[in-house]
Amino acid sequence: MEAAATIAVGVNSLLVLGVVPVLLGDLADHGRLSAAGIGQTATLELLAMGICTAAAGMVKRPRRLRLIAFAASAGLALLDVGSAGASHGGLMVLRAVAGCVEGVLLWITVAMIARTVTPERWAGVFFTAQVIAQLAMAVAFAVWIMPRFGSFGGFIALALVGVAGLAPSLAVPSQFAPLPRAEGEGGAPPLRGWIALAATLVFVSGGSAVGVYLQPLAHQAGLDAGVARTALWVSLAAQVAGGAAAVALAGRARYFTIFIVTSVTDLAVWWVFGQHIPAWLFITANAAGGFVGLLLGPFLVPMTIDADPSRRAAMQSGAAQLLGAAGGPLLASLVVGDRDVHGVLWMAVFLLFAGLAVVAWLRFNKPPLVGDGGGA
Image 1 (cartoon, rainbow, N blue to C red):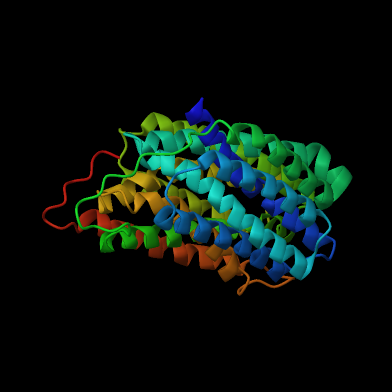
Image 2 (image 1 turned 60 degrees about the vertical axis):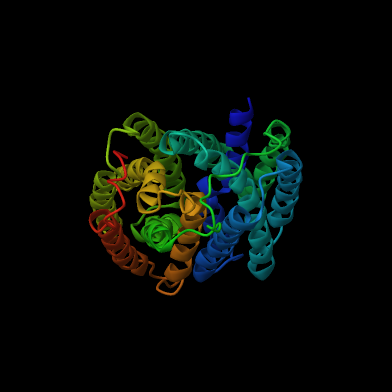
């Protein structure tokens, strides 16, 4: 029950990520955000989420977790209600504060995963549960909420789910045991751990940048917002399969192999997005990207453990992923315009190759005393 509640708290913190492309796209369609504002708003929320997750992991002892989870869940619901009627600068401020609260909730789940014997398997369970919840929300958004109530109803729906999240917050463990630490060592990761986190950040940022501009990319392919909403929930369904595949492959597949598979697939998907294509191909391509995105997610943890066996970097893996997810839309906002957003695709390709190069360096250039890192 405690493990399930801890996973549920993390799911609540990341639920918005499954619907943010259609929420922000609708705001832009109705003049409440500019094209650049889509990336900037997503960046502020994700950046705040990543910073707060990282800060909590480094300075906060995992105690009084039930009180923290309850207060954060309640605060997040209130911020979602406030976001329903906001626009432009006011919306950005509210989403930044919401991101910080979401980061605290995510820290609780990441702290549990980092303390398990098979973190990639627990990360896979978390990713899969998260995507199932996001899928349910995205389908509700596409079929009922967004067509009838627009982004206002979308934020209210998120708030209601946040209220439901109060229940699992009362069932999380009251505290976690401290991570093992060698004498004289601090809580910050070593140099190779920081490099692994930087690789995570860069690699993730490309996919995040493309994802947040899903609706504008659909428009430039000659497709309407309904296609973008369908592509989003179909992609989330594919992510469920990707998360399940990651759980099945945990302990069997090497993380570098998964990185290569993900990279090749993403490049193919982004090429398709740059063409004038029919709706079915746009939806299929986005589903393929969703599948490999969730397949990769849990293997980011063993990659950091391979680079830093003390697991201090693994404690920050979730924060690095969020910072990457924030950095991508921010960089994208610099290369897109209201009439043309294809620049985000070229930028994503550059980020993918840069991140993959660092991961390859870590994998094949290890200090003599560091072992192979295991079959993750």
